[in-house]
Amino acid sequence: MVHVQNLIGGRAVPALGGETLVNTCPADGSVLGSAPRSGRADAEAAIAAAQAAFPAWASTPAPVRGDLVFKLARVLEARAEEISRALALEEGKIIAEARGEVQKALRYVIFSAGDARRMAGMTVPSELAGTFAFTMWRPHGVVGLITPWYFPVCIPLWKLAPALVAGTTVVRKPAPETPWTAAIIGELCTEAGFPAGVVNVVHGDAEPAITLIEHPQVHAISFTGSTDVGLRIEAACGRLHKPVQCELGGKNPILVFDDADVDAAALACAQGAFGSTGQRCTATSRAIVDHAVADAFVERVVALAEAIVPGHPLQEGVSMGPSVSERQMEKVLSYNEVARDGGAVIRIGGMRGTHDKLGQGYFPMPTVFDHVAADARVATEEIFGPSLSVIRVGNTDEAIAAANAVEFGLTSSVYTRDLSRAFRVIERLDTGMTQINAPTMGGEGHLPFGGIKKTGVGPREMGPEAWKFYAESKTVYINHAAAARTSKFY
Image 1: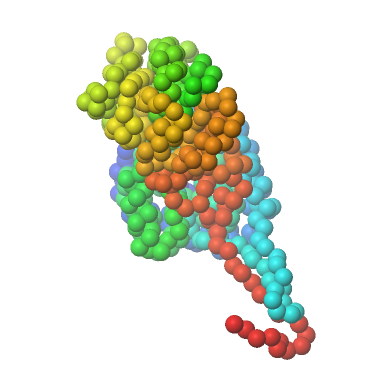
Image 2: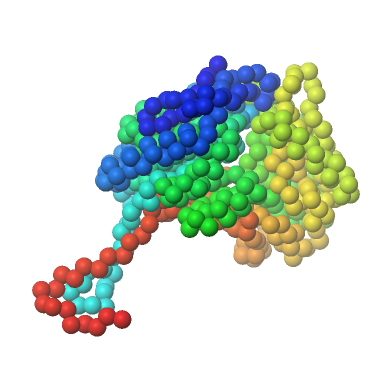
């Protein structure tokens, strides 16, 4: 049993109202512990602590801040197995996937720490004699980070690391489904030596998040989660004239052309559709396949789905864990009837796993919907489970039209041996990222991550400019001429 607390001003404290939330394992329903059910007053206390810590933290030289982020990477590495196991137990990823997530987070924190010595502005010639013109960066102040239950290590750290490098202080509101990993990340920050109040964590449901969004002393919001919630956050921040960064939904396609390596495409598709139980924003949820290879492609994907072994994420030999909660599983399963009503053929799955070994766990089985129309609900709505819709097309133009026929635009994958066609497709796909002959999921820390359309708003996360969201640019003119200025101003 792990009973986590809020982290406010460097102290572990319960919710002021004394209420708690139960944390359970989605693989078997066992109780893992509890977390505070915080309210507005708890969030306000965390904001006050972050506000008090801001002046000293902002005035700390950026390379010194970067040194502490490097220390964060070292303590993360030292506790990698512990946090991997916590992640597997409370979110449901199999342990191999959990370890992969922690390693990806570690690589990005290391990269981000180096940004502390790369926070360059511009030095440019001025129109005015005797004038030195340049730009500099200043941290916003207190920022709110609202993070989801999927990728509960990677996503918080790819927000937290650049925020700390930039000199902001942070109040994080994690998802209620994954409080244990959130608490460990808070502990890592304390262990790394960040001053009290620089990093604060407030657990709970919606109320602390709403407080962060509305509070006048929270100067920017970074959110990852559902499109519906993100649109409301965008609107609220717009009214408050508050910088906002949202990474929202995805409905990512893999395009398989008639000259593709069908075996490689099928394997990439299965990995993207069924890995992490489909609970990733870069999951492959649509396969747009040329008629010439569609039957062979579907046959191979179905065979790969049949080979998946669902079970407890810490169990040896298991290749897929559960949905994060019963509510999420029920949402995934509800689309089976939607698919049938829309005329799709269910080639495999379409049900809850009921094997004895799965017990009371929340296991939707890997599912392949075939002969799906490009505008069908299962082809356009984010399911966030191990479900794949196969859309059959006759040519390149049809494939691109089908790929772009959704409101999302995160990532895409193209399988073809024709490099010229690959480049033509890259230019026309409405996604922020495209992979050629590689799966839809993934992304490297030194490159920007994000999408277009309703997938996201605001600057990209990760990459060499991620820290800029947490700071503001100031332009400076210094008149260093000895004589009085005679030039005209306009």
